[in-house]
Image 1 (cartoon, chains in turn cyan, blue, red, orange):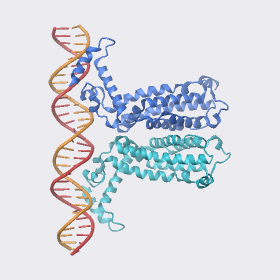
Image 2 (cartoon, protein in one colour):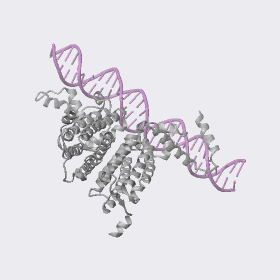
Image 3 (tube, chains in turn blue, red, brown, yellow):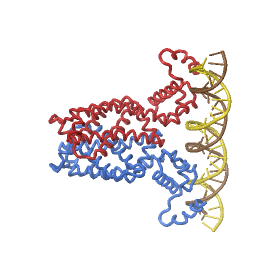
Image 4 (tube, rainbow over the protein chains, first blue to last red):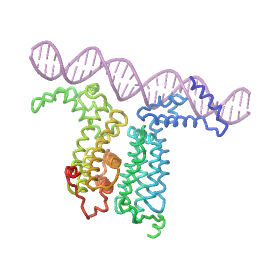
Length: 233
Length: 233
DNA sequence: TGAGAAGTTGACATGATGTCAGATACTACC
DNA sequence: GGTAGTATCTGACATCATGTCAACTTCTCA
């Protein structure tokens, strides 16, 4: 078989050149890559340790050297997602100026990330209910955004940009809307076109938070920096 | 063990009295009841055919006489849910008069049902990703509401009660919001209080569809019957 | 009451999981 | 450049849930 040849020849080709990854790091990365590749093509329910490791040049027991089980591996993928998604939200979370524009920017980045990582996002959401630890991690992942969004809403309320509403509850609801809309639209091939999903999400967020109708070309809603607000209290 | 005694004595006690359920019907019902009971206390991931049938007075293989596997059983529970939820939505789907009131009624019924059946709803959603058939059924369950909501939106648009927007996409997004908000708030014990969840859902639906601000005591939005609208075209 | 059907069961084959102790390959030191 | 010592890998095992028999009860109805 060519696998044993591959494992022997690959180190010869790029071990010294750039940087010498310890073998363990290489194996671990290979497993994670294999998982990403697998989940891009198949749903999580079809992934077994066996099938995953067949794509690697290592054997099944080797998997357990690196991960306690498949769910722990999914937790690693989830951590990567968190960073990607958080990064895109920066404009609305911390920006100043016309708020609906900031929000649109952030939501657009969110949908783009969802589109690019759809199958992985779905895989994590699919796997979560099967394992208590992963389920907890998934809920914490969501709450993380809930809190960030709620904080942002409250700050904009202080600046009179958002009217009276239960920031925490609204944040939670809007985030579930995003998460599961993305999962369903982009979670499996063939993915839907991102346009309608983005349109709906934008419309709902803006209607709810910044009063869609009033925004129709008239008086813009401008956000000052948070520090100024805090200082003026 | 008392099980064999129970299985023998129960038929003696209530077979003739009221109505004679065929034995098979009784067993099937017992399994479904056992499942409901189990899922009320434990997450789906802890349910095995073994543990389920221990609550029954029948043995494990008997389960397979009635259901192909656990997922088919979950599909039955899902069918029950569909009816419950659809029933509550009637006011907004088919009523006439002040629309935000109708919508509030329907959403309140939805949240009530979600509160009462939370763990079952969560169990179905949890189980769905593990089985292709059930996943399809779950998506059809959701699409069913998507289509009903989209149709209602389009009709209200014809009546100038809702402004221009992508009815199908908005319906889908709002339904995901509902479904997963309910699952998370009421899916496991201890359940949250329904108030904040209902408040957030109402606020978002009304802001998005009927322009929350404008509704603030001013001109009411009145829906005529659909037939009139159709006739006037 | 007894013959046939409906319902139930113990026992089996399969396939996935997680864990060893032993074998192998890498690393670094001399 | 060879070798000691360790990091990494593997074959084989025990366990558990699943789904399917053929054989056995228990019901039903004539």
